[in-house]
Length: 318
Image 1 (spheres, rainbow, N blue to C red):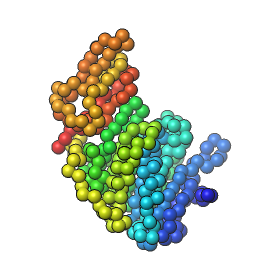
Image 2 (cartoon, rainbow, N blue to C red):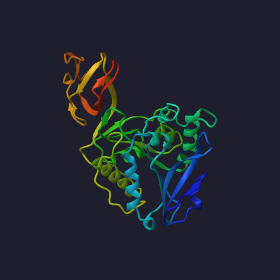
Image 3 (cartoon, one colour):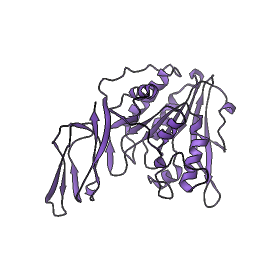
Image 4 (cartoon, rainbow, N blue to C red):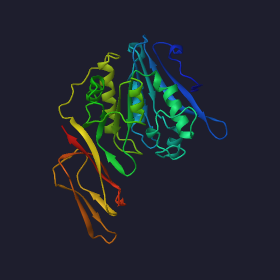
């Protein structure tokens, strides 16, 4: 199947009641060959709401890709009210290299909205925002943990915004962290453009996790049903979701071989042992304890831990 390449996205040119696929040209490489990202667009019979779904802003964050792919397999465009734009891979160069960061070593999710005339990564980020994100009315940005770490299925959202709050709750995630949009993130840039946005942290890097993918897909169907874009039955919002007023990482102050004891989504009590550090001879040199009661959002699973390494991401419950 030949997929059309486009330089600009014009939703008015896309026929109603269709699912179409495009390659969107963003920049050119050192040989002058266009670097493209894949788009899947379902357009219903009305130019109503536009929901954008993005994945792989970091090149090793893969779980969001099949979430988007499967969603479009399950959408009937003839019954769709509005438009869904799926971007399975935002950071194409890093995806191909199986790396988290962009070609110049920069984290794309720290430099949004980029610059029109900037560095390699800044221009790429700017064109993502201006060629794509500005078309959205709502954004769901799918991520995973970074290398050497694992995550629960959790959401970062500005829970003081009623629209964003509803978007987050509809995901029925294990944990929701109140996190006002921060400068440099795709979610923060969307907020600056008055686009309600949430970040879904869907598990772990460099692999597909069927359970996480299924949960992410269900949450997006919930959102589409709530927005009355589809006839999807909205699942009842779970009472089991843990709401956190904030979160922070706990770091090591010595180096060695680290074992983190609690599981993700486990609630730990103040002064509970959470990690043990051993030297290369196997001797225990440091034990770490929870500074306060909280829930384990994510944790390090790499045994090799230098001074200042991450141990555990602790969420403080409301």
